[in-house]
Amino acid sequence: MLSVPKAVVITGGTKGIGRAIAVKLAQEGYRLLLNYAHDGSAAQETLQQCRQSTEQVHLFRADIAHKQEVEELMRAACHHFGTLDVLVNNAAEVRDAPFLYLTEEDWDHVVETNMKGAFLCAQSAARIMMKQESGGLILNIGAPTGILGRKNGANTCASKAGMMVLTNCIALELGPKVRANTIIPGLTYTEETAQRYQLNDPAIRQQKASLIPLQRIGEPEDIANAVSLLLTDKASFINGQKIVVRDPRLKNGGLCLDSTATQSTDEGALLWLLY
Image 1 (tube, rainbow, N blue to C red):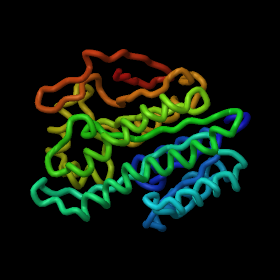
Image 2 (cartoon, rainbow, N blue to C red):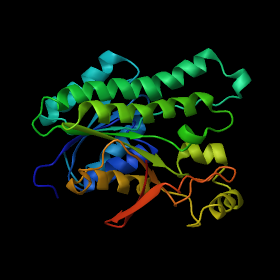
Image 3 (cartoon, one colour):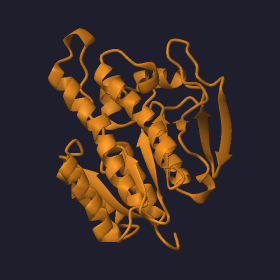
Image 4 (cartoon, rainbow, N blue to C red):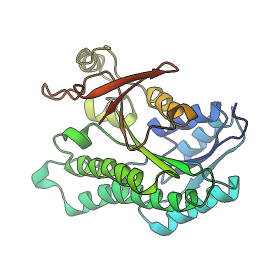
């Protein structure tokens, strides 16, 4: 348990990777404000899971594409905890369509949530953090497709690419008070990826896993472990980095991005830092 628990806001914090992060940090004694937009039942389920470890967990419904709601979210964190130490920008929308048939509405909806929402949350949180003696940390949850792209997902890929560059801008402008990093999950089993890649089919899941040197698909808990590590003082000199949580190779049609990586292990976590 932490002697002085940090206060953490997690957007999209009640499903999939966000839920795993919330449960992990609750187990470690962090004070949490979990944002969600629509699914109240999933939010309540996550809240109950987290409160098995600590009572210092609260929910806040907000559409992060709207500035006023974002500012209310950050004020709520300060109201509950008196401080805001960490923002995890995890909320994301996916609306896939072939490029020639992608509508303006689909583009706007995804980009406004994934990229504009990340910007609004980071800016609002950073304004609070900059006034604190302790500063703060912003973690953006990116995606390999923000580097490589993929079919039928131009809006999602572009939004994730923008979010990852936003991380660098924050790190360059707001240090030393505020640090910012991107975590890039590899193929991770969630409700959304299971549907897109048919991962509930054992044969397809095994075929996908066979392309990964560790011979398994990532779990949300793998990403949560990386977040946990980055919240510790042991990661205090990591800033403005893209941290890929997966096997050493980021493969897409034979393309690998591990030739310029440096490997660092700590507390059982394997992180590849791309410069």
